[in-house]
Image 1 (cartoon, helix red, strand yellow):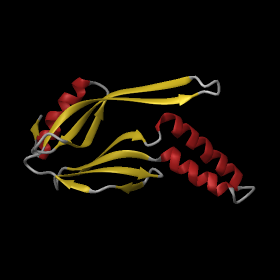
Image 2: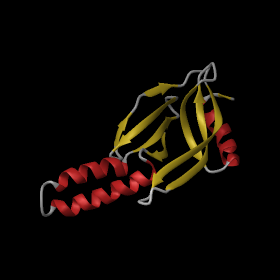
Image 3: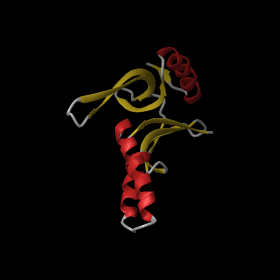
Length: 152
């Protein structure tokens, strides 16, 4: 069984909104002029690109991928070794944009992620994302047991 865990949009919430706008504008403009295809492609790339992690429990491997246009997965499979560990890390992302009056608009995103660590406790990749620490702790034990990993 392969589990897909979605993380963040590649260009943040503001970039995603701008990409959607370009995509819709390109879609409408394509009916009138072929130059709309350029807007359509740029909008699809910016609006739909994201990151995710695939977990293959049967083969004991994980894959962090960048999803170009939302469906082209770019990444490599990492085989789970017995010396690896998993742990919880708090993630604080802040996306900053500026209005026409040059005032900053900050969008904060705080969550907890289960991360894969190597034998010297160096972070390899995030595995799963949760809104609260309690949910992450519950799932940490489950994933650790299914992949045969020690907890950090």
